[in-house]
Length: 608
Image 1 (cartoon, rainbow, N blue to C red):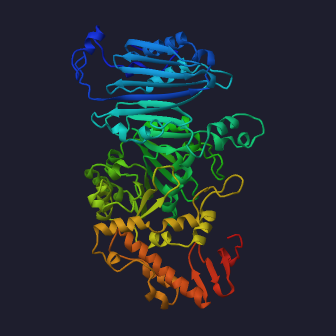
Image 2 (image 1 turned 120 degrees about the horizontal axis):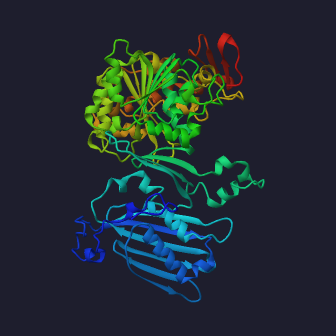
Image 3 (image 1 turned 30 degrees about the vertical axis):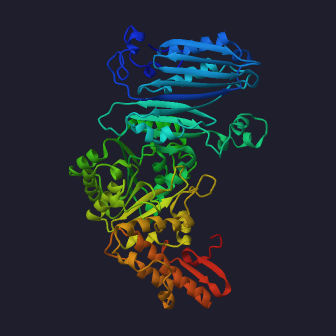
């Protein structure tokens, strides 16, 4: 029961097990197949629409019936009976009764369209059949070839599977999109249950991309689409165990949000540890910083790195960054790549006399240790021992809280709260969170930063927009054309990261109603209007004692805003002194509505 080599990779996986007398086996019992397998009232449903199909093929009952028989035979299904009927003035309807369930289709020859429907009982996937059905029923009408739209659904009332709840089975597999194509699908048997299946799909994003624009981009006819092919190409998405990990259209804002806030919070990041950042894009962003001397990259799955290099070459592309000698980021001699379980690696390294530790910045891109079993809190202790005195730890936390969430302690994300608590219990002096909404996920995404030193790194976290913009120019390599190598992150973006969102504050206060920051109100504090200068307010707003408190973090915004508004209204001169690379000064003179920036050596910087 296998397909021939010219069809799909393996159609046999879609068939139910059958005794030699398949028809008799079907008559055994309602719940039990001839092979003894119990089949619940559930199954797999493949829906497919194809257009631009040859009209003579669509009008021929014989050719259509042959195609149906070929699909059934190639893919190991068992046809019990079928019937095709020609319609007037044109079109054909066919239905086939399968041991597994049924297959049916209808054609519109004059429109070049056929719609197909295949349902099988049991748990075996129908995804391997997609290529065979496209090949056998998508007979092209012209040189442009057929266009196929399909969706795969899990149906019925069987035991709810994890697949039904995963991103991959929502979009793109479960959605009738204009274009989607499997690039690669790899299943591995590993001791770690997290990374045993990897899927990569090319898809056109509904609403944002159209099939017609994509087709025009493939031509060299001088059209706008053909001149900017990269904009109209399909998005490429990678899923690990069905969970969306990364997409080409949003990888830049994602990895810049993951890397740069923590890197700029540190005064002088030289040693960086990347944990399960296997795609190479996080490495690319780290290497943009001039101060970096060593990067250790620990990844559990070598397959992830291989797939990224082959199918996402832009992720580790360092060719456009001036100051870097190697075109591929993985080839940089400062980079050490280790394939190991993060927990095992950290424990082993710390047990050695010449332990490779004292990392200035540690970045973790793995939700398993954030949302996984509570005992993985022990991993945080290892992390704290590997950090330098002023170290900064960054992790992605998953989807950001919504206004209707209960307190984290009473929600599906309870383990996230346990992870944050373990950070506080293991020496991280202050913990802040921030959100980014341009990442291609269904909801805004949350990140967390934990500081080993309360004063230095956290002070940098609340710097001004101008400080961050100037630091980007001073501390990162430009592109080979002289522009900034950061395409999304800048001072304005960092200001939006400086404090948690309103929803995070509300969810936190639902679990900590007695916190003074939750009890005293969170609007603009009019009592602050008499304070002498906003830079003093900023210093006073730094709090101590509570390691994690979104409500307190947001209250510091209001204190700063109150004093700043007061200064503008009074037409007084406001001067803020800050450190960027020595004695840099920012002067804002509100009376003349002018802003003057003074950079290093008291040189006026008009470009800012």
